[in-house]
Image (cartoon, rainbow, N blue to C red; front, top):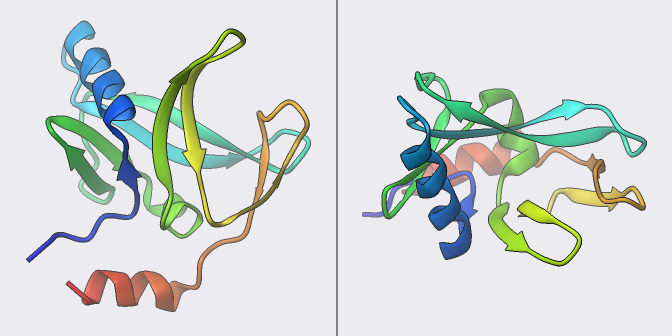
Length: 126
């Protein structure tokens, strides 16, 4: 029986999370969320976790631990967390089915929350 996960993590993102955990004393993983801000209305957040919040959804891939803030679960349901290195940018990326638009620079996004029923069904289906 598989375990419910709000989001998925690519190999590249898992590798980066493990590197962050190894380089910071007491690091237990990273916490992703959303906050109001930017020209499109919302921004993704990624913060270091040293003391996991039991209310967070926990996503794990090969030793990489990602915690999803409860208030962000509906906005991040079905999202794929990736990590990319390009000539212009290095960082986590979000492939989010709930994202309806983004600003020109890509730093802020417009998100529609998934239906609460979708989240409840996904959690209950497993």
